[in-house]
Image (cartoon, rainbow, N blue to C red):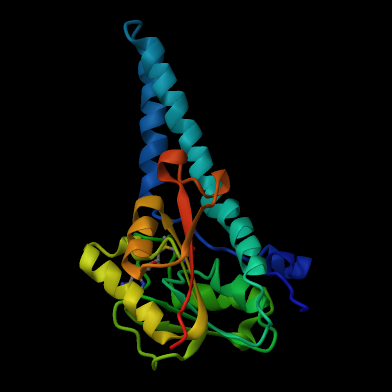
Length: 246
Ligand SMILES: C[S@@+](CC[C@H](N)C(=O)[O-])C[C@H]1O[C@@H](n2cnc3c(N)ncnc32)[C@H](O)[C@@H]1O
């Protein structure tokens, strides 16, 4: 299969890829708390060692978070899409695509296929989250011709049963507040997959375990430090499942 990764797009365009920061309030709060601890440690002697240590942990966590959201998750998905063994002509759906970190890379793996993203464009969940930003990234990666974005709720997908070969989702389903609706999103993902199609869902490990238990099959794999949102306590697990054939 010949495929061009969005990360290996022509150098003139690569610098235009901007995928934003996931849940931007979180690293901002973490960084501020770390700085406040550092200042406290300098001002007061009592407890200064503990405050300095906590400040260091919080600031290091902020750095890890930013690395994950700006680079690490892109590298991980590049590998996961390679591992999926796509033939290049699939129809792929990305749930909660945001600015296209997965969608655009997926399109680069599908020279004669199609990558469709759905989202509700929450700026709380990702900075600068707009369909125009996603399409601008697709254009910068040279895959605009095979990318489509739709405004839709992943708990109620506007697609027919079995209309996709692959469904992906990265750090999106956990944003749905209720467990019942998260599992409905998973049921929708399975509904729109064709029998034998692949489901790839990356989410925080307690959620991924919940999804696997709900499906009753599939494998779980820890995605490692490149996908830590500050530290191992907010690590990401990949659920990989193949839809059963009747
Ligand atoms: C943390 S962002 C991740 C975006 C992208 N998958 C990535 O990895 O960069 C989560 C995304 O899920 C979207 N989202 C949250 N709830 C949704 C829902 N019910 N239906 C569709 N999208 C949703 C948000 O708008 C946001 O774009």
